[in-house]
Length: 243
Image 1: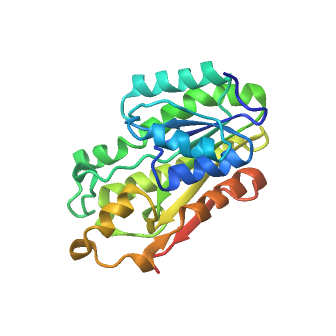
Image 2: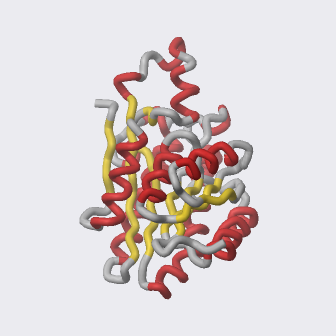
């Protein structure tokens, strides 16, 4: 199987919310889509949904925090489609062990736990960037949190992660300017509709309250992601539904 003439977009951390919105948006622009998440259990449904929209896609299960498994998945994408031309990095988890530790209680171990989501982003870039440089084109998009730009003490160790990921994206953007490769950050503050975390939060109103006024439409974010990549006139977009 070969990639479309437009290229291959890898969606890392694909889920029913923003990940699939990104897959649809770049698929509509002519990209073949490679879906990566720690479990492939839902991929068949995702592939069926994308196929119904006329989008060619493939399934490549991998846990981003398993470096060897992630590397193998990216190798498999490149082997099947010939190249990786766009990477969206947006893994997230609704598991209790992924919940934040407040900044006043965050110790080095909790910060390391949070940063375990950062290191795979670096591994991904190091694997795909040489090919992009050789071809003279490509894109790297990173989803991060609003605590990257606004102090949010309750998010503690995850705020540190968010800031690091945003800074990484913006610094890559500066380094790659003029080489035909775009890097940018989607800074997200709010509950992204249709996603796993959104479903978890809305199922527990007694714990999280009413989040309808703090919701974000994943299709709007995906449209902005495409605009960032295609127009290349800014390095980030901030979505703040928490005002």
